[in-house]
Each structure stands twice: as structure tokens, then as C-alpha cells.
Length: 179
Image 1 (tube, rainbow, N blue to C red):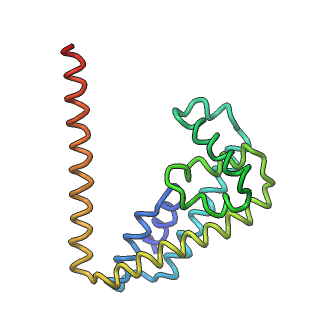
Image 2: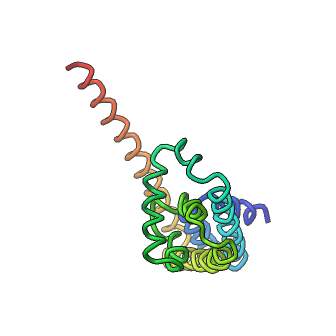
């Protein structure tokens, strides 16, 4: 049960990768119930975005000025909300780079609380179902051993990319200092 609570907490903040991995591991090992996982990440995602919506509504633009880059992302969200309305709320979880500020932006833009709540609940369910199903399919397709090797390969790749970026940044700083 703690694993499902952890999944809900993770989904509160973000979670696509976590949900995919947990679901794939569950399919490959049989240790995770996909329905309970889906329910827990659905609730976690819903509550997280309700929280950000409320914070955006309450503290608004003043809070954004303290977060580097947030104003530009909120402006982009506001533009998408103006153009697409409910469709934006139903889909922002699937748009990389704006999920964390999208709910706050919707709150800042003044969408009615009840409307957001209903749309957010539907969207959280779509998101949870999509990522649990995708992970489950991947876990079934790969099986336990190949899934493990894929996870190791992804982890090693991420570590190498991070280290490579740090190395390049260090070299650029050293070259700039030498000039």
C-alpha cells in the first residue's frame, strides 16, 4: 500500500516517467495492480493540479515574478487557454514543459473553480489511464529481464548526458575565463 501512496505523491508533482516504470515493472513482475496504480496516480495528479490552480488564483502574478522563467511559461499557457479553452485543460498534462505551471496559469487567468475541477478530474483520469496502459504494455512486451536491461540502459544514458553537459559547461567557462 505504501508503494501506491508513493505513486500518488509522485504524481502530485509530476510523474510520467515514474508511472511508466512502475506500471511496466508491475506488468513484468506481477507485483503491482494496474487498477490501484491508476487510481492512486489519478488522485495524486488531480490533487496536485488543484493545488497549483488554487495557488495561482490566490497569489497570482506576484508569485510568478519570484520564479525564473515562470512568467514566460504562464504567458504561453494563457495564450493556449485563450485559444483552446477546455481542450487546453484536458491536454496540458501531455505537453512537456508546461504541466507544472499550467494549472497555476489557469487559476491566474480566472477560469471558474468548478469548471476547472471537473475538467481537471477528467484530464487526470485520461493521463493516468494513458501512462499506466503504456507502461503495462511495455512491461508485457519486454518481460522482466529485458525491462531491467532497458531501465539500466536508460539510467546509464541519463547519467552520461548529465556528466557530458557538466563537462561541456566547465570547458566553456574555462575557455571564457581564459579570454
